[in-house]
Length: 260
Image (cartoon, rainbow, N blue to C red; front, side):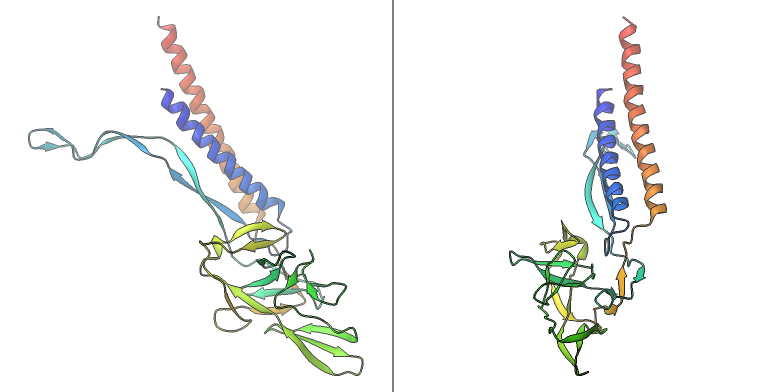
C-alpha cells in the first residue's frame, strides 16, 4: 500500500513540472522569436514479481508476468521550432527568418549565442545590435552619413548616403544546427550550443538549408494559447487524480488499522 503513495507522489511532481513549463510558455506568448517547450515523460523502473514466460509447472509457461510500476519522471523539456506568426512592423531594421536558421550574436564576454529575435537596433557606434545590446555576428557598422538602411533577403545590409549612392556595408549570416532542440536557453532570447545540438553551420540566407530574411517583420512567439490552456487543464486533472490515489491509499490503511 505504501508503494502507491510514492508512485502517486512521482505523478504529482511530474505534473507540477508540466505546469511550470506551461506557465513559462504562456508568460512568453508575446516574446519575439520565442519557441514553446513541451515536456516528455518516461515511466520509472518496474518491480517484477514474475517474469513473462516463467515456467509455473512442467511444460507450462505463463503468458504474462507480474510487474508493478514505480511511477513517472520528467525525461526532457523539448523546444518546438515551428514558425511563429510574422508581424508587420514597417521598420527597416526589424528582420525575421522565413525558414530555418538563427542569427548569431556576440556577448560582451566574447561568447557566441544564437537567436530568432530580429528586433535590431543601432548602438552609439552605429553597430547593428540586438534590443539587449549584443552585437550581431559578423559585426556590421552603419556609416554616420547614411540616410536610409535596408536589409535584403540574403542578409545584405544596404545603405544610402546623403548623395543618394547605395552601397552594401555587410551581410548578416545565418546559423543552423543538426539538432536545434538540443540548444540551451540562456535568457534574453538567446540560445547556446551544446553537445546535443551539434556544431553550428554558418551560411547565407536563402542558400540551401537556410531561410530567407524578411525585412520590416518580426517573428512572434509560436505559443498557442488554446493549446497551452488545454494542456494546463490536463495537467491539473492529472495532479488531482494522483492526489486522490494518495487519499484512497490512506483510507484503506485507516480501514485496516480499525480492524484491530
